[in-house]
Amino acid sequence: MNTIDPRIHQVLDGELPAEALPEELRRVAAQIAAAADLLAAPPAQAGASLESRVMARIRRPPPSRVRRMLDWLVTPHALVLRFRPAWSLALVVLVAALTLFSVGDDGPELGEREGIAQFVGRFPGARSVHVLGSFNDWRPGSIALEDQDHDGVWRATIVLPEGTYEYMFVVDGERWVPDHLAERLVADDFGRENSVVIVRAARR
Amino acid sequence: MKLWVVLALLAGPLAAQSVRSRLEGRVPNSVIPTIDSLVQSAAQEGLPTEPLIQKAIEGGAKHIEGPRIVAAVQVSLGQLRGARDLLVRAGDAPPVQPAEVTTVAWALRRGLPTAVVERVAAALPRPPRSPALHAVADLVAHRFEPDSAATLIIDAVQAGVPQDRLLDVSTATLHEVQRGRNRFEALATVRQLLPNVPAPAKPAHGAVAGARRPAPTPP
Image (cartoon, rainbow over all chains, first blue to last red; front, top):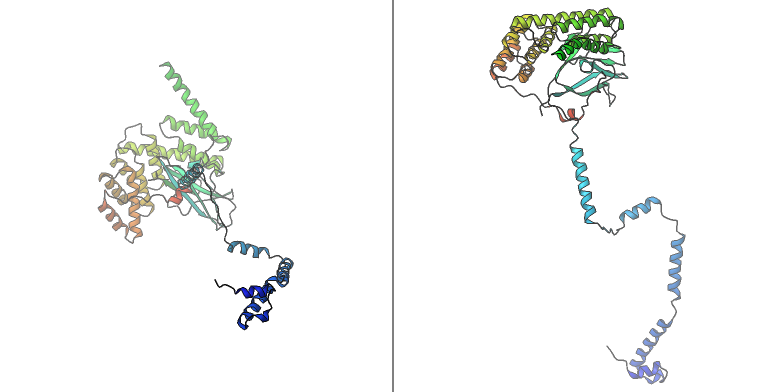
């Protein structure tokens, strides 16, 4: 750290006229005096600038909702995670149980002597299609086929005891139609033909 | 002993009541007594009654006139009697099992020649013959010559193919036709495989998952 000549202190304090100093010291004393004046001056310009910036910010229209959303998305946020081990373990067990139950949803449990019969028929424009047969005592309305994608193809998948059954489709509650996709047809003794399905016990 | 006598005396009227209650509301009331008497005749002869009741209910569901329903039930009763006689000719000692009578009657309805059914029944002295007759009927429905079809199935039984795999024999034969063989070649190919036959395909997961049980039918 440089030390200041004591004569400069005397000049700055007004105890000695500046002309009494040698030329080199007189220049240093003038620089120090100028610096002191600058520090002593009030910061009028800086205050005005801050005020104008704050007011300009206040008068600016608020940002849109989208803008605020984008700002929120790109702004880093602190995430504080607190957990209790007991609750966390319970949550894990619950999720595992739900997952197992959803995976195990394989449809109805088939008995030892039960199988699957699939009924499919193409009936464009039909309002309803049912299948009636010896498996449901030819009872109207008990097994409805569905056309979920409205393409005119009606389907039903039914669990039945193994055996041989005769059946027909009933379209719109009144039109009896044999299943022409069935490989087996047999005369029904009423002048029409029944379709035949053989249900075999499903091998699992 | 007295209890058995009482039960036996009650069994007939109770069965009749059961048949009438199943027919009521399902067939025209005017023909219920006639159909009931046909069913009771079948029961007294040791024949299965369910096919007759089913035929009557089927006719009612299809809105067939009463006299035609009675005629169809009479035809069915005649078929059951014919099936029973065939089984006796094939070597079954009377009274023949009602389930076997139903199977044979059904095979005859599907168009199997009487001689072929009798031959299969005689070649398979132990019931159930249902899988064998279904397998033969399957092949005949696909224009296989009845005698050749029966021979293949009888060969399969004698080669040790279990009863519940006989339909796999007919299925394997049909697959050979789909692969381009003529019917004679298909029968020969499958016969060479015996007693091994391809296992049937398992039902697809989606099919089982989407399956439902029919709503129970009220008594």
